[in-house]
Amino acid sequence: MEENAPAPFERGTDGPKVIVVGIDGSDSSWRAASYAAGLARRQSSKLVLVYVQPVLPAGTAMGAPVTDATDQVAEELMAEIRAATERMAGMYSLRWEFHTLRGDPYNGMVQMADELKADAVVVGASEQAGHRIMGSVAVRLVKAGRWPVTVVP
Image (tube, rainbow, N blue to C red; front, side, top):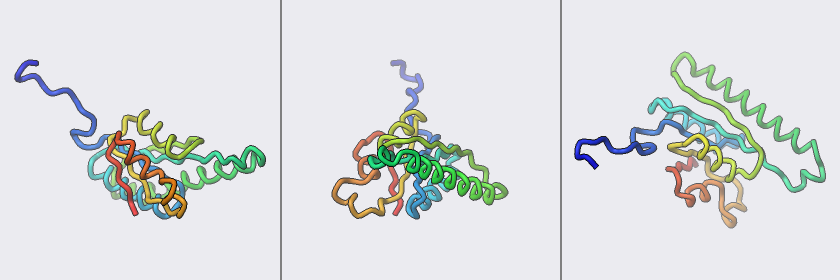
């Protein structure tokens, strides 16, 4: 390689360009979204909010009601996100988008972070006691070691 040749580009070396944050309506996910929004604003990054609609095993027996409930959560999250960005619109410029998909939250976050070539992932700390035993989405994302992961309490 030539001595004065520029180094090849590495994701995230110029600061994060895409920050992916997982939201599910919990208090910790809203804190994570707020933290990520501030980071995106300061770094002039795109903020990508992701809601992964859980596929519940019981949903196969119940059918549409479970799907309707998760669709309603996605619509409510989107309405809250729009309201928050409209409140901030006069003060800050923030590029953002919202994605929703169905499946396992960990796999959904990995899929979106990979597809969008995320430079950073932000999630809220789990509020469920069972995750201490089985591992939360946050812990699994950290262990994946593919992006810097910030876990917001």
